[in-house]
Length: 265
Image 1: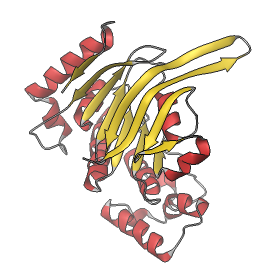
Image 2: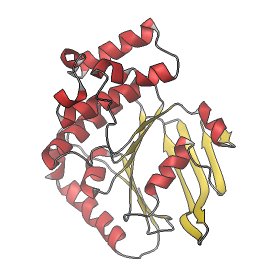
Image 3: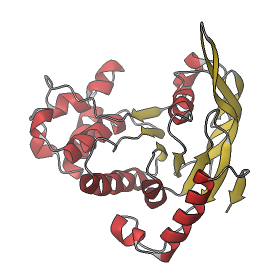
Image 4: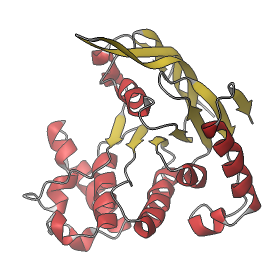
């Protein structure tokens, strides 16, 4: 697969009047076109900081970031990256209809063309939201709101989806179904995704590869490729397999023990 993103020796620390708080320490990994990568680690270890660096919201204090082989030199240079960012909450505006919510990114980028409007309407139809396009967000379920947030992200045609715990506000049953649904949508468009999650089961169920970070300052403890013969659209079926249990046990051991970094194919 074609290499899309490369992080090399990335380090970052937060600074205030009381001193320095290291967040990331010499992190290196690559992401290929069409890959779904999940990143897990202890709470507060710097996962969201890492995503902010990839998005261009922060610049690393050390290390290099490459996108399609192009060196990213500063935050402004990250405009070469076609990135869609989904946060922990859907951030749909109640005073706008679902349709006007999902074209917000296009409006901000001054890209509300007929072609893009037609594309948005097709996405709404494909993902069972067309009948709700004139509704307000409060009239939709949590899962439907998350699909709307995904369509808003897809509308700008990103190459890379950054997902910062986008399912954490959902109840457990809805989360299980919506996360699998959104992962299938992203895979169906051959887009690349990086998911931050505290849920190890979610990471194993959705991802092609799981990256485990240590406690702060975070370094890479483990990279593990995930393979299932079972259809990925059925998360319950995946979680009942022997492969799932093996992945879970191995990754849980890495997460809960201070062992050195390992590489698992």
